[in-house]
Length: 222
Ligand SMILES: *Cc1c(COP(=O)(O)O)cnc(C)c1O
Image 1 (cartoon, helix red, strand yellow):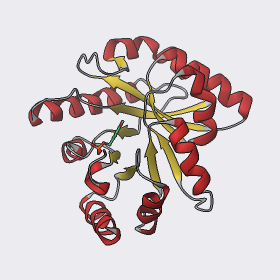
Image 2 (cartoon, protein in one colour):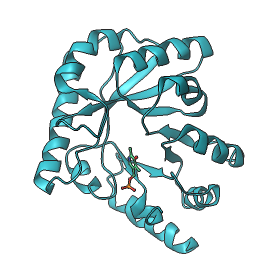
Image 3 (cartoon, rainbow, N blue to C red):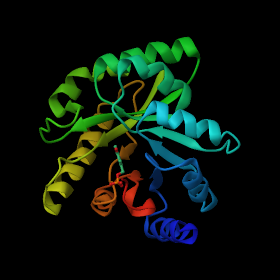
């Protein structure tokens, strides 16, 4: 078990272009599993629940060079904890949440790297901006000077064919380029958080800079 996690991590890392950051998604995995991945060289970890992450982070406080990524839906009442516990929030999915995080980041004196979650195709199962909603909110997002908005995050709807998934990732890439070309004063669009175990190769092909992998590294969650 120990060596298999190590081997899978090594194998996947070697298969990724050096420009793509591997985020090991450790939701439902123990602090011990995180230590194994850390020993294999991983420094970026993704969690989707504030409370679950908090207990693991407490156990792992000796590993001070971990970068923690929040990737789950963030409720407004957990925004403060998210800022205190995480370096990145990939799943900022509406303007009100962004503005709340901006205000809290200023009060707490913390800096937070952010991706804006977009839905390229309609998907009632997920939150996030549609393309037109995002365009409309960009002026206000650019005013969130205490947030370091770095790019976009997307998750394709479940059940698409590979060509359709690739299309979603390509469209996300194009959208980031378009926004970048608008020369906003603060927000940046250099990062694309896209690709999970089942589709990360397509995401990398389309220009992902961060892939979020769980199952393929650690096996199926229960
Ligand atoms: C669980 C999760 C992942 C990892 O999914 P796998 O299919 O296990 O690789 C990636 N991103 C988000 C937002 C998740 O919730």
